[in-house]
Length: 254
Image (cartoon, one colour):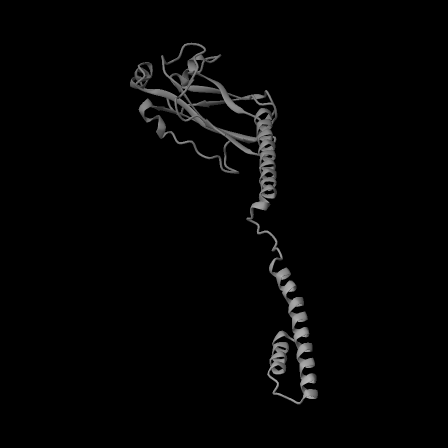
């Protein structure tokens, strides 16, 4: 029986019309019983409601009581990130120390009259000997290289375009170069220099350029490249043991 029924029952009992003494006594007894039942039910209902109203809800994720847990979470994430960054730095540092590094170590210049024996037909033809070396601690694999000679004014040296060495193109043989290994590439210019060109090269108005590209894979299977641009100014035919110098631009590597 719910509360509304008990209250209705009490109201009906309270408003009973006047009866004879016997019936009035019975009515009073019923009313007293109803009052007692209503009081008991209300007494039991009220504490239950108070208990339910004071029941605590679980804390929200943003509640202050969760602050220590969130702090531990962020500390853990930061620790994982720091560990990953440290491992990546160590790996990159190890690769930098152990990988192959292939660069032109130097280049010499002469003409046909300076050879042994001389080649008079190649007088005033610039000849360039390029020396390439792996200065790293591990081999360079599938190495290919290309270079060209140009005679132009220094102001125009940025027009010297270095091509990407495409697969299967005719850029010479493919080789593996061990640590400390070296090889040479030699190339003749395609014509003799003119008298004005010889004068300009001596006066720095023009220069002889040897420029090119080296491509290879290192021990970590990463593709590497070296672009180079070397420059010669001075007398021509050159003095014995004349060499090229690196230009200010055009020298790049990864």
